[in-house]
Image (cartoon, rainbow, N blue to C red; front, side, top):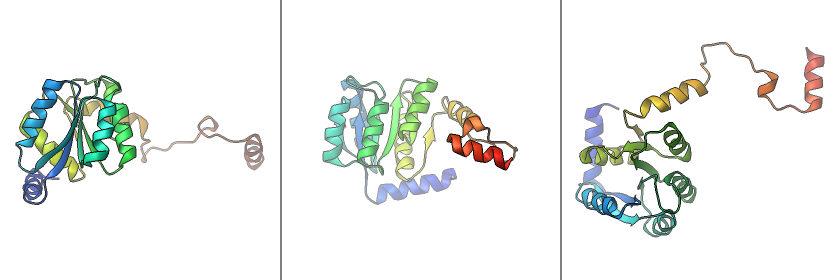
Length: 186
């Protein structure tokens, strides 16, 4: 999506209904700042907040957000497990992970849990509002620091369709009888 189109869509979003956002952040001070910051953004309505995973589930079912801003380090659980749980409750919800961690484990596990965006806490406030609008619109976003981690995983995991490859028997779970039939066919 081009920048002009994205900005146009973001402006359109602000003129239609505001995105319903919930903030899940373990630090009271940071959570209060995020709620105040996001609440002042056109096109965003902060409908709920929580400081831990248990509270996040309760607030989530009451306020029905469209986008959840999720910290990874929560007092009672981690944001990855909380992301997975909230997406089980409502698969349509979009999750933006906002964290200090740029480790491969956290990035990949967050994406596998269903996060639509992975942002580091050094993200500029104006960009955070744009990221929320982007994921609400169905897009994804990765911080430039962690994008190579996801790209490297993808390149190592997904087979290249242009390269010939064979399926070894060790990659396919076959019964004894299926292996016998294959040997007879060979």
